Image (cartoon, rainbow, N blue to C red; front, side, top):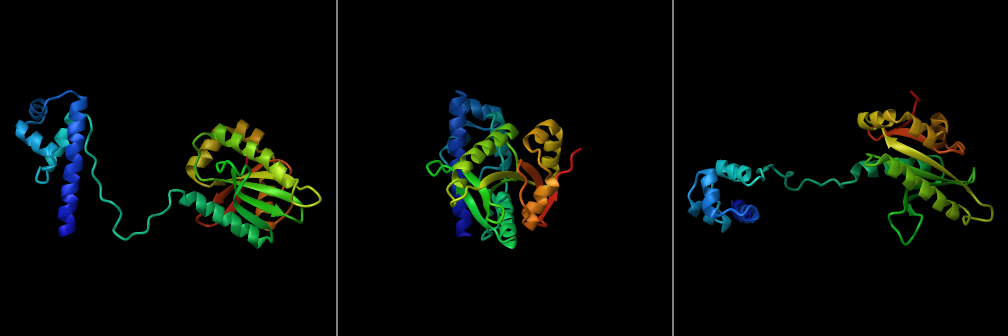
Length: 241
């Protein structure tokens, strides 16, 4: 009960401050705002001072509409519930790729930097395939913001990884690149909308890339694209439409 009282007061103070700031931006007096929502100026004064703990919900809603800032209310997560990281979907894909590398007796690295001084330039999962002497870049895509930028970013990482491949041991490794895309309706629809771009950027056999990832076969020389269903862990080929 004491916690509820404390939260009620804190919410009233925060909302009161927001009402005052919004009113001042609109150059309204307390009397003018009160007239808009049908209350006396004294009510607006009390609200702005943080004394609105007993203000009816309907008045808060009216104030939000009058100020052009509609009130939004929701319950938070249950107390004690574990909060998922914001990149949980992406992490799940990376975890599966690391697992597949272990299952096929290859070394794998998580978020391997291609430029140590620039943490944003890192490979989601980099697999060292010693048997075929290939450094494989796995770029895991949970969602897309800018498809063109994503392709350019992967190309830069591939070029930078070529320097890493030259330093592994006496004989240089080659670099291979594959996009591992979350299998869902939105991603499938997006890639289907740009078939020419996808074919040009990822010309290698998707089926061959699935075998390389899941069975440890030699990765194709050209970049490829496969689907990953995080719910089942299944990697599947992209079939050209």
